[in-house]
Length: 347
Image (cartoon, rainbow, N blue to C red):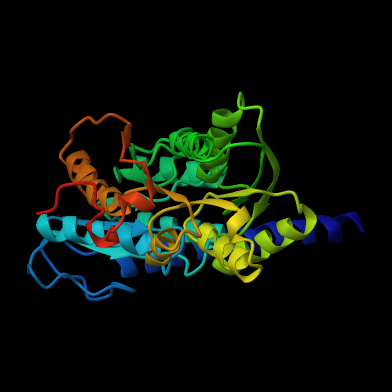
């Protein structure tokens, strides 16, 4: 019996080892097939993007990995990165999960490392596996720039993006300045576990901490979707009829909140401050349903992240925190064209 059990265990260990080796080989192979190409050539196996036909040769090959591919905010980041890539003769790929998915995000980073790209731009993830991948990339001389969300505990080279704590803080100051009397605030945040969302909430909380007339009733999650924000707003209005204000911490939160408030004809009594300048957000500000929004500069983030990777490839030492612009926009600041809100230099 003991001999049979030992034999079975040895067989199990050996099988597990073979599966591990096979999986590692597949990751290396497909990573190389997906990403790798020799400097000066146009890759033919790249997935998900069309090569920049303005140049026949490229100096670097970078990969931009967003939180989710089809998010309007991340498309602005992509636009900035592509413009910088075109200007600096860089081949850029835009790859990642179609909807926020940490496992898929991490897998894409691992594939890019296996493909031996020249640099990776990615949203930071507050998980040990992410830190491990950043270290793995560094060991292979692949610099990683975190964008939008930092991972300061990792060995990332540089963070390019909003000071998320500050953005929450100025949102809190805005509601103080824009309102009078007692305010009962509900916060709708993209994801409870997202580091940048946590900072936006914490900054807001700290800003209003000494303002006795303003209190926070609840913090609900939207899962970074408009329908999720609408569901959260509907739940809040039902459970907390005393709510007088909403703060949405991700790009679609303000829109989802505004739609519910409008449908319930409660706009005259509800203050809403959102995040980012999607066209629908600006329309709601124009008609007075959303009072204000925190403006980030996603185009600037994308553009500058490519430039920082180029500098890192050239061996330059950079300050680890490269904060982009942030401000509050009200109706009197309109009209405002999202396409012009680059915040940085364009070629």
